Image (cartoon, rainbow, N blue to C red):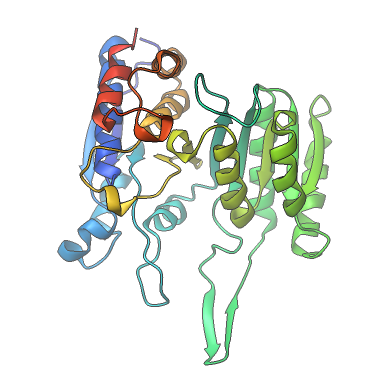
Length: 341
C-alpha cells in the first residue's frame, strides 16, 4: 500500500445523469480500492436541485457540515437554474466554502477518440474563486444591471504559483491567458504577477495570449500548449473548448483544489433529458477519480485507472453513444473496473 492514511470521501451524486456517472465511477474506485488495499470510506451526502424539496436549498448546511468531516468529495454534476431569483450554483458554493482556488482540467488525446490533432496534452488551470463569478451581480434599476469582476493579488499569486509548480513535472511551459488590452487594470495586474512569478522558474517557458486569440490557436496548434493559467470566466470557456478538441466533454475530468480540501467532478452538466437512462459517458467522472488518486498520493492507483480507460477506448467494443458505441454508462464503468490490474 502506497499510503497508510485513512481517507473519508464524500459522495454527491447530484442531478440528472449525476447518479449514473457517479455509480459507474464508484465501480472503478471500488476495484482500485481492493487492488491497492486503500483505506477509503465513502460518506454519502446531497447537493443540487434534487434536494431542494427536502431542504429548501440546493446546498444544505447539513451537507457542508458533512463535507467538513471528510477529506474530499467526488461529485456528480448538479443543475444550476437560470434567473435572477434562482438558487446560486452548488458548485460555486462548495468552491467558496472550502476556498478551492484551483480548477484543474486536463485535456489529452485519447486512444480511438477523435481529436483535432494528435499529441495534444494540455492542462487548463483556472482561478476558481473570484473574477466574474464572485457573485456580485445585481440590478441597479429597471434599465441597468452591474456585474463586478474581482481580481485580487492573493488569488493571482497562488494560482500562478500552482501553474508553474504543475509545469515542473510536465513539459515546462506555462501560458497566461488574459484580455489586458481591454481590461488594462485588472488583467494588467494579473499579467504583471505572472511574469514576476516566472522569474522564480527560469527553466520554465512563460508566455501569454489574449483570450480571443487563444480560442483560434487551440484549433490551429493545440499541441503547442502545456499548462494554461487564467481567471475564472476565461478558464470556464476555454476549458470546454480544449475538451472538445480532444473528443468532447464526456471524457473531461476536473479537480478543484484548495489548501486542505478538494472536489473531483466531470466537466459536463447534468443533462436532465437523459436522467435515469444509464446512457451518458462516465469516463470524465472516472478520470476525475484518477485525479483524486493522484491528489491522495496513490500514483500507481491513478495510473491503473488511466491505463484501464485507455484499454477500453483502444478496444472500442464497449463505448457510449457519444463515442460511436451503444453501451450503457454502467457497462462502460464495469468494463473499466474489470481492467484494473
